[in-house]
Image (cartoon, rainbow, N blue to C red; front, side):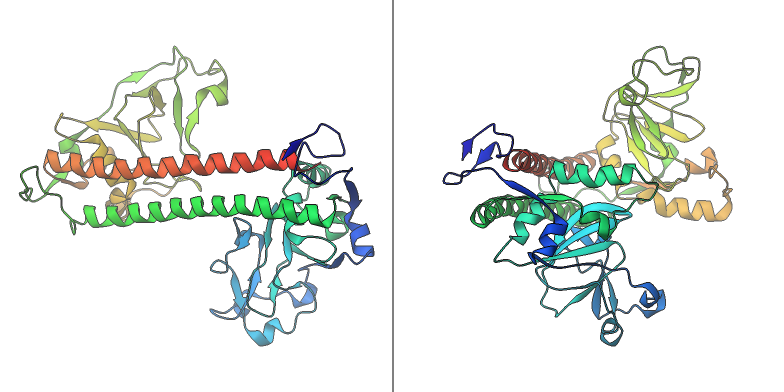
Length: 423
């Protein structure tokens, strides 16, 4: 590739291509039959009722079905063939570029299917290009550039409605280099997308493997041996309060802590939320957590429902005591790492559901009685087995984190390419 700074020429360009790029409105591409068809799923009176959807049939695609530039048909609703045949518009075919234009605006996907057609919901527009005049794959990447995002973001900023109608879309500009250059760019970025998809799938498989291991380990279907190859003793059952103690010390905020916990958002960086001071909160009394402590969310929000347990591995943290029950291991032979993984596997939820159904008040906070909370039964394996389980699952976490970092880097790399390969 070669570098250039000309404003109508991309900064990063394949050898053999010269000259400025044209920029044309989508309407011009429609008028020139370069875009053969463009239609959304605004079905009017034909809009399907919920009872018309079926387990099998023709996919009914919404923006929520997009994943990594493809359509995840496992997420999509289905319509019986006869009902699907009744639609007059929003009928999309394999190879179409799909653009989410309503509610969730911006995601794109290229439709790949062996079916004759699928039906689009009101949230999606399809673009069907003449491949001998314009590359659909190039258009897909152009739709994901900052320039195109700015165009539809500007429209939404001028309206209270989170949508970009099809007539407005036609006013947007797309870059139009020569067809050979379009295909060259699309092929290259397609290879990058393949790498991103592979990393995302690898991360998903590792996460699924970890979940399976957790289920097997905590149900004791799989057991570790001790260092001499012998079986560990049977797991004991203990009340939570026998192996953990409540953190009752309260502190005022004299210095800015690193994090606090929100029932609605989880961990909150104080620097990001408050800057250097927590205005008006210096005299409030909080629970101060150390590394290895836990906080249990007894609140109930849409994002973080009751039952979330937050292990503190981040450093200095504060928690609001009337929202969270905070606790720590009461002896050195209790592995916080083991219990962090046990709680991550929602072990406490089962006991808490019984506790809540038997008496907790269902108001803004569930107000679980602390005494009852610490009576919950939890397993207590031998300390060495606790550590083996924690070390094994932590090793999986490190692998997942490593792949996650690779995935983040690959996505950032692609964003950099988009900025340099498009004008």
